Length: 286
Image 1 (cartoon, helix red, strand yellow):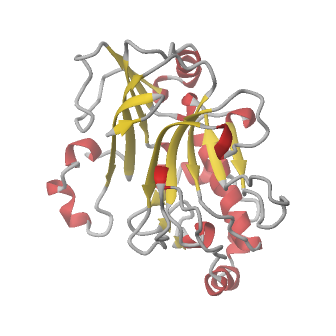
Image 2 (cartoon, rainbow, N blue to C red; image 1 turned 30 degrees about the horizontal axis):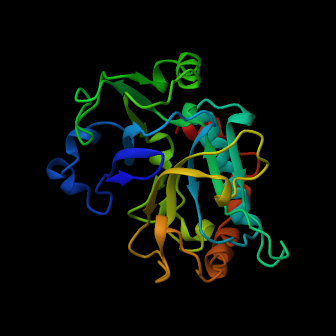
């Protein structure tokens, strides 16, 4: 359940059994995935407790800064490009920050590594009267409006949403999931290459967040956010600090660097040549 000063509702996360595809037919979310290409889906459903006039963001956030070497940075840049094209976003609708390096802010608040977009970056929005909302774990085909039905119409609908009490909102997100296998801790965007998520997130879990934040902010600082939901996601191999506290925020996590051995392997396997001049649109069609 979700219960805070801004929102009352529920969240739902389902992942395809990529560790054992033979389980697909009997998997609890088999109806949800079917023949679709998505590997996972995240849903948020509920009512706002007060009107929301600030921009609302959907984001993936890490708890600590992760140093990246050249090959990893290149992979990350390609993935960001893929996300932008896949979601039909322009340059202003996708915010990306590697975060502030440790000990560079002189005691000031540091921005965390963040990839964020507005409601236009969601994949499906359903607005219902209280009591008429769909089961959040059911097949939502044919309900509400989907981004795939037309990005322009979806952008207009999302920007004009009246986010206030009295309606039940269901937000669904799966856009980049076909390239991020969380169960297998793998990036699947580059054909023929198994790329570990740990090379980009330092082995940390990441937060699937939704939050409101005043317009005009140059950084997505925690102190400026009004959180709707903060859901922690990671494979069994991710490093979860024992100091995880309210909002699942890891406040004292050790700074973790990318796996140097893995990055060396990427470079020696010729990933530089694979990525040099890579067009994300080619990867989307592969």
